[in-house]
Image (tube, rainbow, N blue to C red; front, side, top):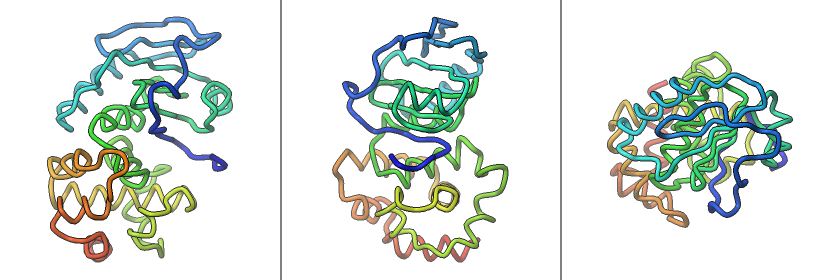
Length: 224
């Protein structure tokens, strides 16, 4: 993708994802939701399982099939295994998580939220940062980071991949966190469900939240 993102959700058809198990990986553990594969790195199978159960309840969605969690040592290894550089990469349609962490909350959000719909990278990453990273990016509050970001929400929604990830992820996480606080998680997940692939996201946003992206972005900015 040309950029080194901290985490990535790849919204592709299942056929585009890797087949399991990948070369060099061995089965390390199994839970009701997951088979865990590792090259020796620790996996926290029970924590991952518990987190996904909690996320399914939070989002009102279920992972459609038994998932696979690959534990890597470095982002370079993730890139070699998936073709995408990052500490975590998720293929929601194929129910695959590839991560350098024993339990990667950000990627688990992608896995579960990916069952809802596809409103685009800005909202996908925003939800993962707001929930999975608990509103923090590189240890700092995304609301604080977003205050200094001179970028409009509609522009980021349209061109998220072209923005510095440290700006994009912080603004997305702050904005989606704002939506959750103001409208509730049920409304946010309803918006995701209103966005099957190819949807006019701006129109779906306005219909779901009763205001345009411009208006919501301005109100969010005032709240910081």
